Amino acid sequence: MSIHLIPGLGATSALYEGYDLPGQVQRADYPPPPDGQRTTFAEYAQFLIRHQGMQAGDSLIGMSLGGMMACEISKWLPISKITLISSCTDRQHLNPMLRHLSFMGPHLPWGALQRTVCPLPGMTASRRIAVDMFREANTSFVRWACTHAADWNGLEHHPDLLSIHGDRDPVFPIQRQQVQRVISGGSHLMVISHREEILPLLVARHGESPA
Image (cartoon, rainbow, N blue to C red; front, side, top):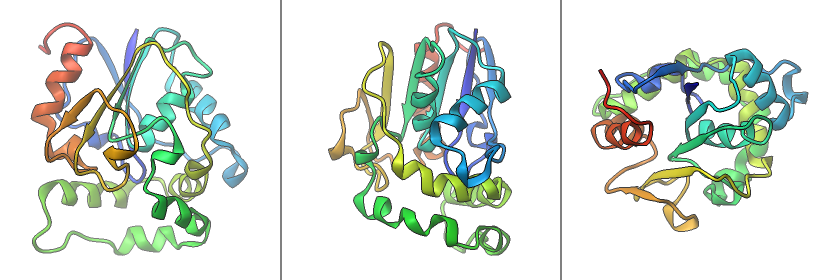
């Protein structure tokens, strides 16, 4: 059985740099949707199962959009554990302003934005890492996800789901959902900035100490 680490929107597998977990770990990157914008959220989840070679009994760890994708994957494949980081189980948990702006997704010049965005003076280390990943993210996937994530129908239940959330997350405000582990001072990018707090939770959840 494997642990699959799924990044957020505009991120790559580099998001999980330093996350050394016990057992067999696979870090996912997002390929373009197989049928372009016509690909549904459910179809992409099934495509990612095949692309990553996921198997019944695997565990999924997903940050932001990656957590939503993990929830959707669990509808099509028996997943033993789901761990959400700065994520949600329902689209209503998303900041309403961001949800209402999703219609702009297909029309924004994502390729040009990725080429021109760059770290600014005074940026935190976590934001600099996020900018670098955004520049490397698959443009077709980013354009697709910005539209379809807002239409996701959510996950009603999973027998072993843990939500780790920051109390300063503006994307998925903590007041809009129920979480099991709260990271004090954690923003949406806490998977980078609060790794020393999050990693022990993941290690404990998956058994042994990392080598």
